[in-house]
Image (cartoon, rainbow, N blue to C red; front, top):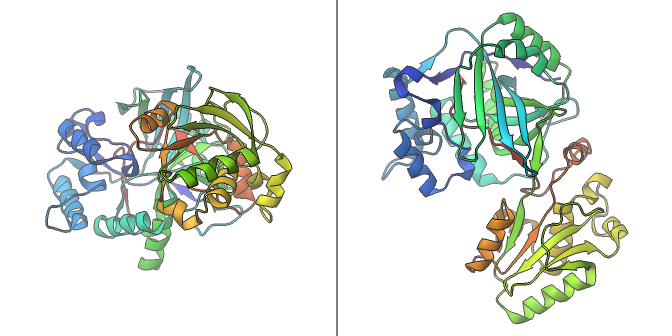
Length: 414
């Protein structure tokens, strides 16, 4: 069961900072140095100053804690006395050009260990980001960025009455997503949302490192208190706007002609070519379908010659995992053909990721990659089935779009 509560949020005072869009940011793990600079040029109070701290010659986490305290004392940030839930709609353009709206509730959720009927992960994590987020949590004692989770029960109808007024704020993200946010203070709505999600199971869609940080922080502090909860953005699995985009793979370090020859012979042995000169596998059916682009200007669509071979390649895995494109690619190509280990994949040795086919082709053109695999989106049903089987996917198996902005609200942990 999921324990979902309203909470006394810390948030920006819009009278002090102006439009909320000036001070919010994408999640920390998609911001590079140039992006951070651009956000701070928009506003000196942008949340990246705390959520992605930089301090020349000093401790960045102490800098984050000091900045947070300064903004609270100066009235940039305001701490509510009364609890609230925060309702958000995100209107965006889907890959097919249609407009969709995804509904989300920002709430405080009790931190649980992973397990059936509670909270499940769906991707493997790495130790580095977890340590960074733990150090930041220790210093600030706030959840600064929400974890995006999918719920097996839909609580949006319960919170929707609180959205029938003008929104508290609107944020137009750089990707074109229009985010509308309502502060919902009605205790009856709070109770209705908590009741609806009481029997729900939660599947973490984005923010696995942050959730494992929350578990570590809960155990470190010990006892009962606000630190036993974390900030989540909750969307129903049946929400009509729930959309998964693919994440493509870029390969580098293929300069040795013998390795390149071995790579292509391995590909031809395992895969059949469906079409030359094409790269987008969208619409292809069956497990193990990819687009392959190379730095020699070639491109083709691939499909496993023997779909039944996934049982051999991924023996011991659930059926849903064995039919996962990202898992097939990792096992058959990265491991068996190129000899990459799971540690190599997690450390991104010779591997990078791209969100669009244009980004893939651009990386190949400028020499950042010698080859690239174009993937299909992973269906939400398959994500859930893998999690139900108690398994975790390879990194970047899913790209839930749009992202949840950081800086809307913060959850106090003390």
